[in-house]
Length: 114
Ligand code: AMP
Ligand code: ZN
Image (cartoon, rainbow, N blue to C red; front, side):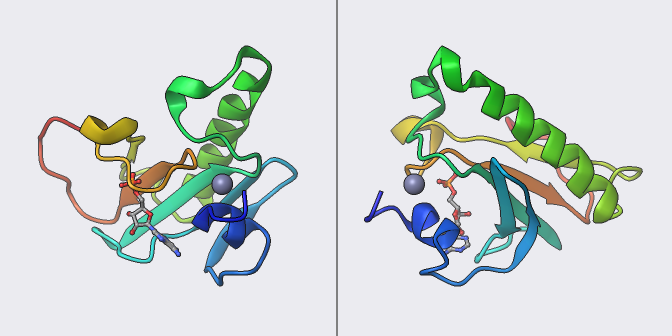
């Protein structure tokens, strides 16, 4: 998708600080981190929202969680813990319409709704 910021990151047209890449998945540092570790994990295939993941693409969600597992170990946040957040739609606070999972870590996160 030409006008999608994350597709442009995948295409290398917008710079990013990559932390992980494989055939299906890309992970890079969030430009506006809310914690010492704030990484976004995305499928290379453009899908706008979690609610629109088709059955034939559901394996990509498993691939994303396999990547999250590897990234957590590489970033040394696997022992202390981390939070994974995926926002969907307007009420969910989704700003970028290409599905993404936030990995947030590096400090003790408060108890809140997400
Ligand atoms: P969400 O509100 O769940 O859609 O989150 C979108 C996230 O993308 C925000 O945390 C932004 O800081 C982040 N973001 C937007 N543009 C970029 C970019 N060019 N590089 C890295 N992160 C970005
Ligand atoms: Zn996209």
